[in-house]
Image (tube, rainbow over all chains, first blue to last red; front, top):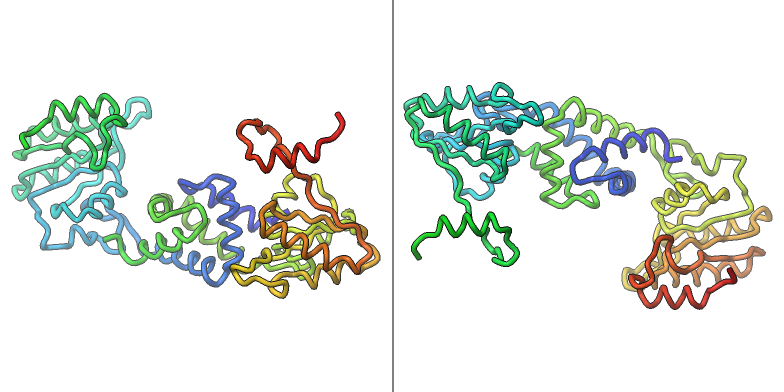
Length: 197
Length: 197
């Protein structure tokens, strides 16, 4: 009824995170309606990204240049190395503009269930970088989930041979968090890690 | 930090209905990650739609051919003409596979606030089609909102000169609807339009 071209567009849009079949149909219709204002610019932007964006060979970030902007930036502190699960986490930390060190993207988390082992992640690459005398501290910015903490422990063990301090993100009450909406685990962690005011 | 190409992609994705700035960033990342499996096919699909899809000169539907598949289909009942606000409503009715007549897309609703008058909609085109001796009934499948009902009344008046029956969609309890979750207006309409079992 809608023609194979539009049907194919709907199917591809539905594979984006956050879009289901129904919202993909709405998005496709919005694109067809705004051919010159949205559809063609989006097609151009996708082609530009496909042609220009590559993975940074140093840290695993995505950028149009290799090494990426973070790794090229000489004002950054090369002694701090922040380990993240994915590029999205790197972007989230960059948005805070609070961290001025460098990154290592793992590309996932250890998971016995999903069959993800250390050889599937950039652990060897991380240890290699941590061996450099420039690096003094490795910050494990990994999710506070079972897989995230398992991975953090594994990496801390792997880094034992390197002469670096290993730290993790603080756990506690999120900014703006109401106590009675927080889960027990978070409250317990916040209580145990209490600090003088 | 993410490069102008990715930033532009995120901005364009955020203009799709259903995607905000945050989910657009997630979608862009998913696209970069799956370059060959998703990014390039989506770019191709967008280009194909831009090149092939046009507005049907008869009813206002989108299709790769003009007239569209619905208007070309000789098995359809030319005596029934269903008036819809937008192409998305036409698609929704087609998904039910219950209506075998033809359509007229209005392209919007009358709205004094938004400055939309009858000349902005396909009302003249609808009256012209309704004048044809083949057409016996015009079904107003317009939303049950103030603007939708205003538009329906205006169209019913405009069709008074044509020798066609004018009908509207039934109002009542939606299928699967629990009474205590329905608004008063819907319950009142369902009660007023009650029918023998």
